[in-house]
Length: 178
Image 1 (cartoon, rainbow, N blue to C red):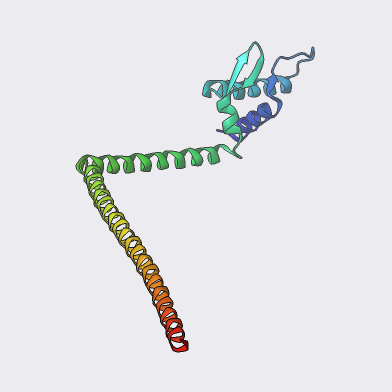
Image 2 (image 1 turned 180 degrees about the horizontal axis):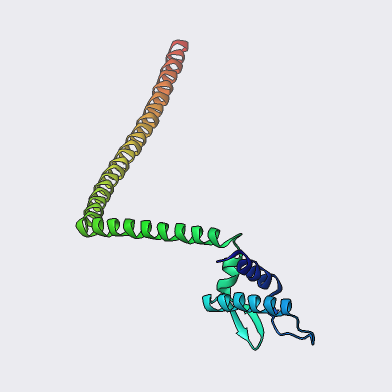
């Protein structure tokens, strides 16, 4: 695209439209040449789909706005080329991924089965440990209760022994004094 045509596209994008109707009564040869050149440029933009025409008013299209965002037509073309290259690269990698998935369709199932087996094993171990822990705490509680009973029995026996000793001593004192 020629520089004047691109400049005209930018001018239309800034003003949202351009009115190409000749409203003056004076016609000179230079004016006719300029008008013919401008009409040629507008026809080119119209043929490329960058502007649309209603009567003599030319309005920029969405595609035209997109192209006008770039500094030049060459910059737009290089951007478009880069997009196409990225798209081709993406399609190439998508094909590789599809091929890999078709060849290794069993792999996700294998990973899932291994995960289920590991989970069941961990669940079994945790139940055994909790059962073991429950049994040991039950045994500890029973042992503690037995120790408490033994210690209270010993305390009672000790008290009885002390009472018996006291009774004997008192009894001996009483018998001596008699």
